[in-house]
Length: 113
Length: 111
Image (cartoon, rainbow over all chains, first blue to last red; front, side, top):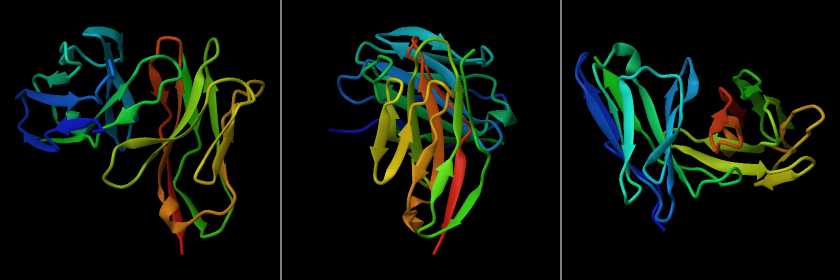
């Protein structure tokens, strides 16, 4: 079956702009999580959606937001981009539940200039 | 809150050496524990998992045992290969289904 698909793979934006990243989970998976990966901070949890509802949220400013659609596809939006937002953004999908394995996409590499 | 601490890298070993990457966790209740691996240019993929105390997860020659008394989940492999070079992440999943990752340990295997 198809894996987790993230688009676009690479993105270059200017400070102050906004960006929307997309994630298509594995068919049947209702949980989608987003992570920011940087060399200095490692993997940081942004938020998690399950059946269109945000269940968990990490410690990121309100400029970072997301949503999930009825087909489980998810989008993440970052407004008023800052240089420090440059990172690899990873999406993971799972069936949900404490023992469920998370399947990751290849990520979107965002560069803010 | 819940957290995962793993040894800082990078770790550099020769091929066929024994590998240990330490991981300890802090959590309320009984989390599930995971090791994920990230190869260059790719997303993370699950390496192994354990869902209750004393469980041993294993895959591709890697093993880790869920030790509740020491709150640890150390990753081991008896004989590493060059192809094992990657970044390894220890993680836990708590009752809110949120997965919390350690900072990752970069592993370099020299031929």
